[in-house]
Length: 631
Ligand code: SER
Image 1 (tube, rainbow, N blue to C red):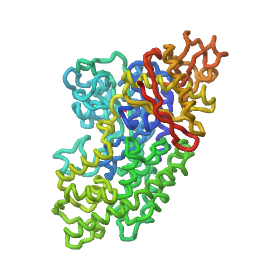
Image 2: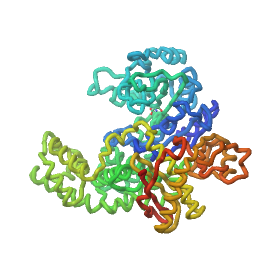
Image 3: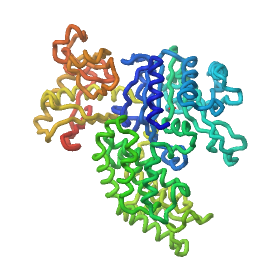
């Protein structure tokens, strides 16, 4: 079975059980300064899991592209990726364990035809005030799962929240006990990972393929857990992994997502370089990182030294390091595998499909830019290596790493290479790791610190999927963005349309379609108009109405209408509540601004204070960007 069939089967299965398919969120979340990427299917649904009404109802399903930067170092084994698709189904205060567990079991055994004997499950053993999950245990048993296939674990393994176990959850975070399902490949246990094998053992025998989280708790301000009254289910299962198990092959890089790209790489590698079977690691890193890069660029990220752009740059550079390992000097590896990596997504993700040439161009430019740096920096590192190991060329080691040698490369030396050739210390570290070298950790750490300070990319905590920030200041900026959108249309004309938005606690950034630089007068007019609307202290109304009604009222904004019947819109307007029927003849229903939006917003515009436009610049052809701050 290929990934497309599995994705389709899953969606169909849950639609058949009363779920509505919702469009996936962007990989780069909008208006959420605390996290760089969407890292799970539930992330965009947090407000709804907390009780806000979802326009599509209480049962939802989708396949969500996710990125987890924290797994970047793990990539290279047979199962870790940074980017993946998460199949997800949710109950927003509707069904619970009695439905979720049998449904997922049925999906695995009937739809994917996985033998019951190969499935193992884990259940929460209880902790503090949260009891052992005997209900889930009994349900698994009733489905015919034997006792020796059910394992109990504590908060480290069977509790899920975006921040980890209960003591790590910040105030306002939601989470709960979960049930994971594992597939047993039957490979022999490796004692390096512990005496006994069990589903959470890392030896490779078991692969986790799905996680049903029962979101029953909220972290209170006093640090205790509060039990939620509603039943919430948050299920997530990695599509890559489900595809691998449905083919009974533990190597996810042999699924249709990657297999062709790996074959293409093998065909163009230098003849003396190892094939996939002999040394799969470089192949896996190249195809995995490049696929992630394709999705990031497809969502509008550009390589840079900050935030998402920095992660993208890192992915591309890391794959370049590995391409050298396969003896490839130019960038033919890139163009050769690009099409292979995109093919599985044709039709599924039009934003990738339709922009293939542009995405390819942006990645190729970055590769070109970095080529000289990497090749010269690499040569300099090689000179150090050769001096220490009496003339041995590390590229001729063929996997025969010289064991036990600790090369005392000092942080200053690494930093010198950075200053001379621009090769970042972490990339030097990557290269030297490939040559089997151990590092002088202390001085290496110093060099890394220096580098981080320089590139200002540390953004502590941002690589993790933190709590979505609904802080007051971010919410004010969000409402200000709606006013700005409408003011731009008023001043520049209705051809202006939102192209993107990004808010932090310090500023808003708004991209819009417009084909020339704005004049100073226009900028001032927009700023004045927004400030006037703020001063008028307009009320902000939230409505969930049928899509057709929202369209009839000319609601604007970014909206993916692939699946929705009902939509959420926000109106910032004069002084009366929107009544769709009474107002459908009026422009924007009588509101000054009327936008498709999931919220949240402040209640009235006076709370914003005042804004100042600090910059207006080009982003790409026909797209401009405004930065503004609250003053
Ligand atoms: N949110 C859970 C996870 O990421 C299940 O969807 O594992």
